[in-house]
Length: 204
Image (cartoon, rainbow, N blue to C red; front, side, top):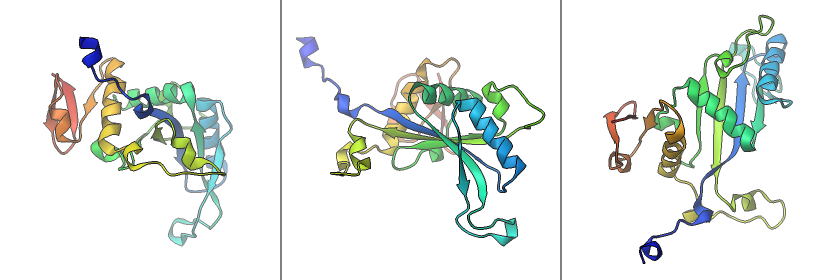
């Protein structure tokens, strides 16, 4: 009877990582950008894509359509593996402002060698940005070319849901720090809010 009384979770509401976008912005074309592409290729094992400037910014010496950045999109188990490495560098700590209203989040690191890549003097050291796009089963209907549909309002991911997912995701990581961003997190056991400005939570 107790098992029948328990409310089962809807599998269509389960959050998962749709893709992980890695970006290195150099601000100029040339040898530095080529070396940055090698960093992403070593990290992901994929061929990165170059990004072009949309506008001309004379104060920075940037011309329109000039290649100034390089990015790479990773999915599946490889995305989770690289994300775990990036969170380990950040000591599994994120701020509330790292999360968007649509349920995605991002962060950055200063040195790519912290991810376990061997230092190469010919390449140097680069920082990179992590952008994580979360989704639910059925989100692909919005990306179809034919018979494209809309994602229902109740099926969309809210900011609090993404933060709660991240909270549960890092529970299995050793020496992990927690994040909180709403009053709901203060009601969770074994956690307490220590600072409102930095919105960090530690294990009590």
